[in-house]
Amino acid sequence: MEPKKATIKILEDVLEDLKKGVDTAIGNYLFKGYRIQVSRYKSSGTERYMRLYRRRKDMGLCVRCGIKVTRKNPNTNKLYRLCDHHREITDRKN
Ligand SMILES: [Zn+2]
View 1 (cartoon, rainbow, N blue to C red):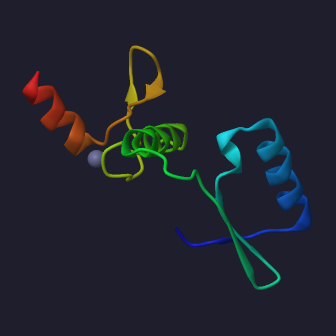
View 2 (view 1 turned 45 degrees about the vertical axis):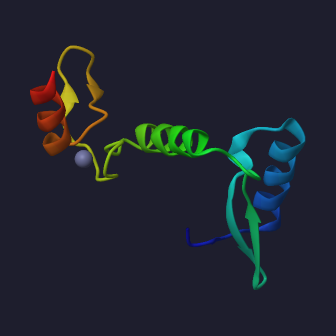
């Protein structure tokens, strides 16, 4: 993951999140040429997968491949969690 440029304000928010123990603190930050990495120590593959899944879902990306989902479920009016391609191959399996 490429670090994102951080201001001292952003780092303060990260510290707040760390105090609260919430995963939103996780990330790569670039501050005055320093790279600050916040990650879970020895987190299991499942936890990592769940975080990726949640992040992609929140951003409206296909949870399998990460491309932008544009189609909405007409019943819920929410974006599908899968892209057209993955929705198709997943539906076919069911
Ligand atoms: Zn996909």
